[in-house]
Length: 238
Length: 226
Image (cartoon, rainbow over all chains, first blue to last red):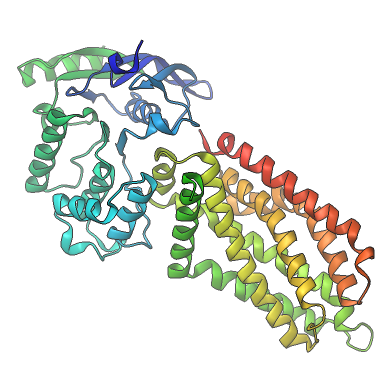
């Protein structure tokens, strides 16, 4: 398939085992630019494992991940370049200031105007006045904002977000939602893993429910959240 | 500058900046080196054995264990806040990542060795001025080799439990050849022996460096990718 026609993200038959336990049991996924898949599931369903596999931070036991048609292998830097990941942890160095952390990340991605990119990211995250602070001196919510700034710094085409609204107050959550919606409309595709469907519902174009390492539900986002949540509970109980 | 080298230097500079700001490992390794030298100085009988004869063993024992402290630090800073995920996620060739870590470790270990060498001269009151250029050359050559192995082993053990115990157990056997060669060369340098007597050990050190720097660069990807 020519790369231009390839989906932004495509995963086929993803399996990941930890010893004898299989965290994922054959997960398929396809995402085009402008689409947002919200992944829900109970604890241990394989959500974080799925996200780490999609980010290339873990090798699948079986199956394959392609980003813009390129197989996501450890040696392939081109396939990793479009990915932005927000994980449970901030990926920031505690002994570098927030601005230094972002400048370092800008250097890793080879951004042409790193200082401008960092200033813009700090501004968008509402952290311009905390740029010189060490991450450990920030509140939990501020740390989450700094982590989001790092994830979005290089304007990734594929955003992988694990509980992005954790620790954010209402206004920061709204601001992040707006920013993500704008990113998606412009060019990005997103996979959002969350326990709280309502938080990411407005962003979703598709929803998926992982139970026991398999899709229990995967569909276009329905209109009615309450009805969907009832089906979600049934799927988890089944 | 080639992109791979730029990335390696960026990572090395970040590691050194973090270490200079935190200073925890630099202080630990420096204090450890000073402690070992003080113990050796008080334990030896100066009438039975001279400082120059003891120097090779004292120096290289001190360097080796101080280096282990440095290697323990190399990837533990990456564990905090899962910062290493950020490195693995970025479009950085694994070879550049290894080279960056290697360079930072090399600078760090060399700094600790220089400090230990200065303390050795101070405590043992020996004149190393004639042998110093050769000694520095041997230090750099030996350090280049065992830092290569130390860097990859520290990456390997960082995800294990008891990483600080595992590292010396795995690493020290691999450090024996360069330490042996370096101690022999130091002994000959301090004894004022001709270069021809050292050629074999120099060849061994060079070969060790070439083989292990190459192998470790190639194997790094296998070690860091889950």
